[in-house]
Length: 197
Image (cartoon, rainbow, N blue to C red):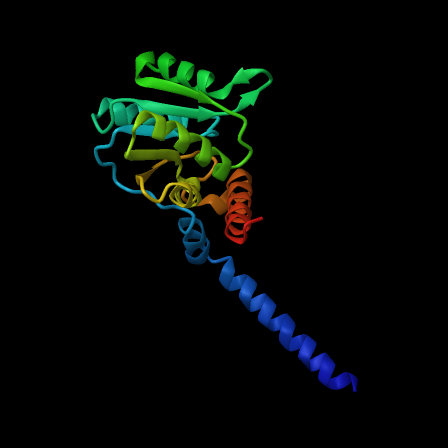
């Protein structure tokens, strides 16, 4: 009987349109973006760990500020290789050009392809150094997943996530194409990490 199906299709369409309107409201969009962020206040620790990425230098500069403010004595800079260059070396050079002493940083280049792989490599190095308390520095939108990865790999370590503001994820991220891409990509990574994919 076509009539009930038509009524059902109209009802479904109305629900989808209403959901789309509600979802596109800035309140819900802001909450969805905020769910990615787990930014904590700094506390004294033995080292800051700067995660790979943050190509604009926001992560390394945030770690340098933490050292300058006395929260940590040094920062371990993690990263992979691009075109034969070690990302940590480029990040440290960037910080030096911004007036921070080179000796504040320790480079840790590796070939990890995910945050969880990176966590395993970094934690191994931290254990060699005898570190028990660290500040995990990454872009603000990456803090929740990064902290989860590190806590899964090293539940015995005291870890605080410190978010570096990222121009790719502004407060009203939905108003820029890059913000929407960053939001979508991080949520996809969050879901796939939770599912173990």
